[in-house]
Amino acid sequence: MISQNFIVKPLTAEQQKRRSQRNIAIGLAVAALVAIFYAMTLVKLGSNVFVRPD
Amino acid sequence: MSFVTESDISLSASSGAAPADYLALLKPRVMSLVVFTALAGLLLAPHPVHPVLGAISLLAIAVGAGASGALNMWYDADIDRLMARTANRPIPAGRLSGGEALAFGLVLSCFSVVTLGLAANFLAAALLAFTIFYYVVVYTMWLKRSTPQNIVIGGAAGALPPMVGYAAATGSISLSSLVLFAIIFIWTPPHFWSLALVKSGDYGRAGIPMMPNVKGADHTRLEILLYALVLAPLGVAPWLLGFAGPAYAAVAIVGGAGMIFGCAAVYRNRTGDLARKTAMRNFGFSILYLFALFATLVAERIFAIFSGAGL
Image (cartoon, rainbow over all chains, first blue to last red; front, side):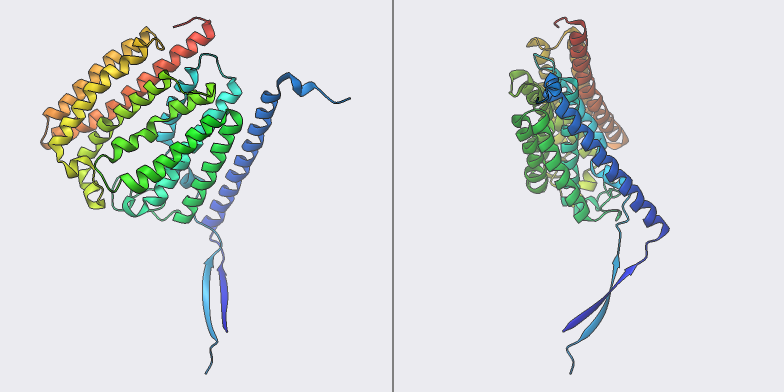
């Protein structure tokens, strides 16, 4: 049987700053993707976007 | 006797890469040229594409090009660290791991192709997927390290964006988009070999069989001149075929003459600092030439669309 102790090093201030920057960048990319697909859907639907079932 | 061993394994909980390092993987300068040439293809369409769908298509093409740049940097990290020009890229500089670049490139490739398929059509998406495959597998993994014709054949990947742009707008391939493909395809060797003449030491250290390292500098200079002699008249073809106007013709004729003049200077000046300077000047001018051709084409098409006039 082999046991291993995994020691997770705490992040340095610089690493924390970069991780936070990456998180913001990923958030912005996802928001942009949502906006792109929303706009694309509206354009593809055209005036049919106002057609609602009775 | 015990089979129990204990070992401490230190894990870093986070990568040290900043968003700027991921951005550098996309080769932003190459991306800007791709956007420009794809825009020209998009605007060549007989009927204007919806501006929102056109903008999304361009973004998808740009991201697809960036993704292939990231996959190229992932595969080439071993030789990038041997060359001064590329040693500071994110992977050889140690700011980002190869696995991170691979994952980033694959994810962006998939997203860009699917987005283009949904925003435009599946011919455009297939062409974009083929462009990424061609650049990463055919050029980077196969040709680059095996033949001095690497950038000639591999240049097709850089030449495809106008065809992708045209396909995005029309769902088809036309003679006009093929001509734009041919211009970039023929432009690539004199452009790249001008740089390779100056950086042949770098390429030699990395074991890449660039033309100056395999066939010699003089043979490369001759080929640069020959390609320029084909490129100059080819650059005028969009006007001769009727899909570009007189402003484009003027830029293509003057720029083409400049390319022949610059490549002839590279052919003549073979030694010393003058040879280096001439080659680097020709490298810079070749970028300006291609940029001017496509900028004029784009400006003419935009003017024609807004004025409702033909060319």
